[in-house]
Image 1 (cartoon, rainbow, N blue to C red):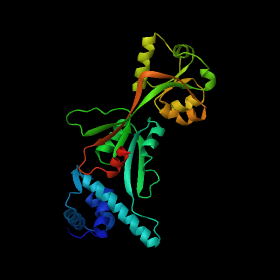
Image 2: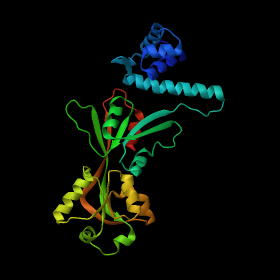
Image 3: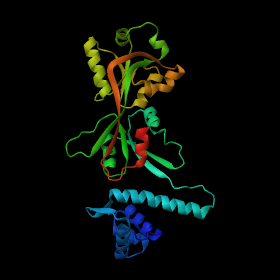
Length: 289
């Protein structure tokens, strides 16, 4: 394989950052042809195309995204070597994780715990809406998306969906509100409820349960964010319909109690990836864990 040098990687990083040969060449004070020649030399050395044409600009290929990760690690290592002879900056592998903004933080940290704090791993977390995250996954800006909503799939979809966990859903609230010996029907008939917003799978399951029981519960609050449901339950706004994992700390401390398990209603936690020629090996470690 042909030799790769820092000059190749510096030009490659400039083009990847700018998105055009013209802009990168201008910033580097080089001719466009010189930059193009060096990029082709790097691609020949690596044996893979690093960019693909999109409109008037250039976008990283999957191999290009991996090359950029390694290039950044090389430059970080070079900077560390210049600054000190101590081993303070070993090259680190990056895992880019997108998480649905409404997803339980407790579940996210539980999934990522095997990598958190490792000296050789950098975990980059991004939150957002489902469509935004899937676009990031499709453009290779993310390695995995954590969600509780399976993406729409057809024969042409690139998504690979792995079910990580199936969590029960319960009626949870402050000890003084729950009392002792009260039935589920009694609680649903008399206590205000904190519910996930309409459109969520948990809400659909709860509405079906209420209909089967012939109840029209009083709704104190609705939220599409698990963190907000947790806060409302802690503020004693009512009884929350929520997976216990979301309020795990409060249940352990006794600040909240699980009044009843809502049979037949569950929360699915999913990991969505896309078909890739070079999958991030850190993901395999997480899935095994």
